[in-house]
Length: 366
Image (cartoon, rainbow, N blue to C red; front, top):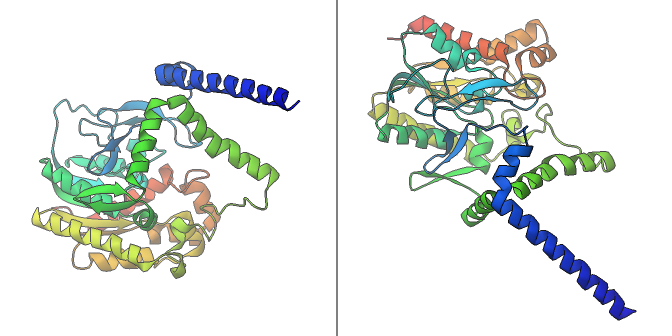
């Protein structure tokens, strides 16, 4: 009986080995082709890795993409790899700009057509200026510094730099990035990162299946069968760590706030040396409207930073708080943010664009 059982186990292991070998072989040889044929929902994304500042946008990208549950929209970049309006026709590489915007996904304008983002609206209202949007999802002050420095090294020139600092930048500075040898490196073990990249490239189907299992299937099982153990802290909850640092001092180590400030001080010094005027912009997340005050720590930190360094300080906190006071906070969350998301919709972008115009109108662009 024992021998019979062992023989059965051997047969099962042999079959499993053959299945695993065939699966890996098919994925290795035909994975990308099979994904392109059968996974029609997969759309190409504009993001690409960068050796100096971690990641950026593909050049001359033009595709319909979809952000979360938002409606599909056309996404375009120019010959520099900067997000731009899709009607732009720059056959030659232009490296000279009057104004550059730099920020993360909010300034990139995730989920909204470029012409309806606050950068796109600013560009439309100021047609005499060459505007560049250098922003990309998940950037933070360390990346702002290194990308700006690298673009200058590549021969780009800017008269003005508008940096819009996001609430989540402190979290990204704490968890994601550090600077080594004038390059952005991830805080993960580099050997582990390289191994993951190789696996992703060699076995695309297995990688994609694993991501779906990890991000969709397993969480749904946990929610269904273990609801009490899997209650999550969402972006609308007071405990959400990416946004809670502005109203919960214990939520973050002050060193990471200092780290962001130091990176911006270095960026300012480089801008000053290159005769580039620096301006900074801030705006609230839903959590700030729910749990914070108008004169948030985010506002205080960067307003203080700007006192002796900035040409303009763009503060959209009062604009959103005024709407919340006139209507209510729920109204703002429903009408000015993408549904189920922290990012602004078209109306939210319009508020920031109007703040930009009002601040600049008082002093004018020279």
